[in-house]
Structure formats: C-alpha cells, structure tokens
Image 1 (cartoon, rainbow, N blue to C red):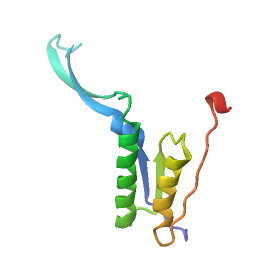
Image 2 (tube, rainbow, N blue to C red):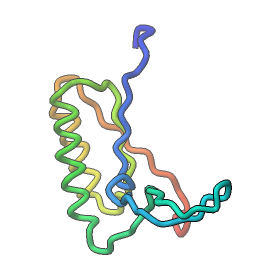
Image 3 (tube, rainbow, N blue to C red):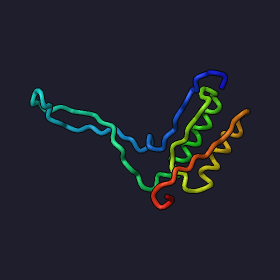
Length: 109
C-alpha cells in the first residue's frame, strides 16, 4: 500500500449483543455498596437476521464514507447469502475487493 498504514475498521456482530448492566456491589476498600455499570454479552436468540441486515447497512455507510481502506467483518456467516451480501457491497465500490477467510473449528475441523 505504498508504505501507508491501513485505516482499519472491524465490524463485529458481537457488538450488537453487548449491553450495559448496572449492579450493586460492595466496595472492598470502603465496605460501602455502590452502583457499577458493566458491559455484558447477552445472546438474543432469533436476532441474527436483524443484526446481519444492520451490519450490511453499516458496511455500506463505511464504504460510502471512504474513511477506511480495510474493513473486517467479524461474524458467523454460515450461509453463502450472508457472505454474498458483504462481498457485493465491497465490490460495488470503485477499487473494492472482498476476501473471505474461513477459520475451521468445531465440526469443520
């Protein structure tokens, strides 16, 4: 890339499952109870399709803004149609390319 540093964006489906949760915990130093807000992963069954559509829209927006020269989509793409959605958006941009990396594991190993 001519010695230029890649302007990288990672879009992860896990971000859609992260939620803020507030809980009351005992402060070990003071012994007082206080509110603590944490980000926790909350799986929502049946939301895959909704989140996939949202990720494709976000990808399109990122590509149109031309702010990134490398975008990584971190998502489970167990159907060719989901992979195709991302690839079609990438190749519709002038000079855009799509690369698919399959990481074997589980039953695929």
